[in-house]
Structure formats: structure tokens, C-alpha cells
Length: 153
Image (cartoon, rainbow, N blue to C red):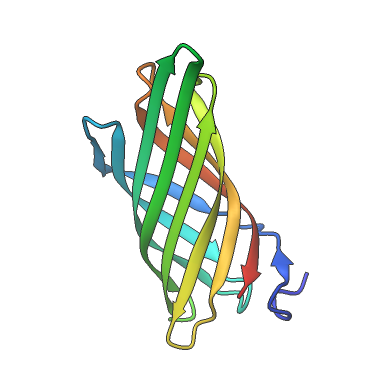
């Protein structure tokens, strides 16, 4: 499959989107917000550049119960600076939000990363699937993500 070409070309990522928590950067706050440091690795579909770097991640899970049942709101955001193997730099930001009507050990969301090339590096987006893990108290404990497609801007 060609990785160069039309701006709207979607590219399946064999490499995927890798995200791993750095244990030293994990902090759960009293408001059910988990802040952690992670590493993001993406493939730029516009120039075939492999880009990676540190991102600051925030996970929020808010579970409430009333006469209408259980309601869970899940939020994940991150931002950071990535460096490519062709010496380009990128700013990445992403948000994912979803609502659920039942408690679960994890919640599945979709995300879209907005990746802005600095200098001459081409911009792109990455969409994918996200799973936010929680403990028995519905406190976020971590997440995993995998890319589905990338698009040149």
C-alpha cells in the first residue's frame, strides 16, 4: 500500500499506536483524575515517518447513580511533542469522551489524534480505539490504545 499521495488517503497502520504508562509519572487525584506520563508512537501517512515521544495523559472517570440508573462519564486527553526518524518535530493533542449506562471494569472509546508538523513536517490525524481501565471503585488505573487509520491533512 502506498503511503504517499492524496491528502485524504487513509492508511492502515501496521505499526499501530503504542502507548505505555511510565510508572514514575502516575498520580491519582481525589477527583478520580489519573495523570500519567506515557510514550506515543505513530506513523505519519504523508511521509512514512515514524514519530514518537512523551505525552502527558489525563484520565477521568465519573460514575453517578440516581433513580434513573447508573451513569458513567469517561474522558481521556493527552498532549506532547513527538520527534520523527526524519528529524521532524510534531505537536500532538487528543481528546476522547464517552458516556455509559452501566459500571464495568473498563470502558471502550474512540479517539482522534491531531498531529501538527512543526516546520516543513506534514500534519496528519490518527483515529483509533481506546480502552480505559478502572478498579472496583471506578477509579481509572490505566489505558491502552490502538490506531485504526491515519489521514494526511
